[in-house]
Image 1 (cartoon, helix red, strand yellow):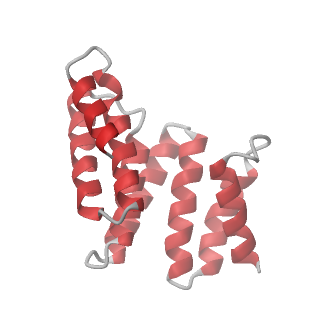
Image 2 (spheres, helix red, strand yellow):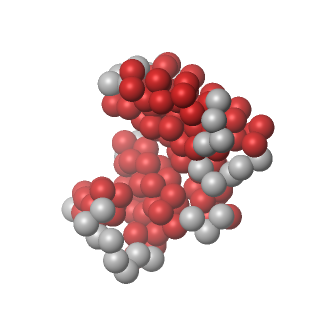
Image 3 (cartoon, one colour):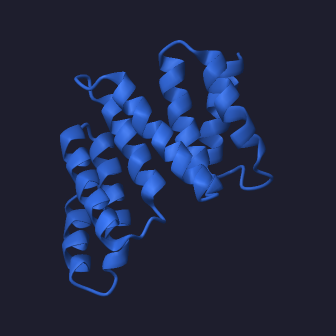
Length: 154
């Protein structure tokens, strides 16, 4: 996390500032894995502010997805709020025709629905998105989706 924070500070003043919101999402994801949810959400606030300023939307769906994931991990946030962000991520990814980001959003939302006990709804969402892919099945995202689908079908 320290290295990511230093890297973000260094990038902010350069011509590569365009990717700062991407690196901020890495910091947010790392924070979430370490249980630092509030810190992760603050990183996403920064990423979203940069996204709005630059009008550059290529990573928008992932910012929204990670916000939903972190809110779902946070015990004080209502699950409906996490679901709203994940649905927003899914919509943006579909609008941009960003299939990999759509898969990530669908997988995250399917996890939420599965946790809520709605296996059919989760499977019905994830299965067609997963079925779109014809290669890359050894990637982390597709392995995670396949494992979740197996759990939802079993």
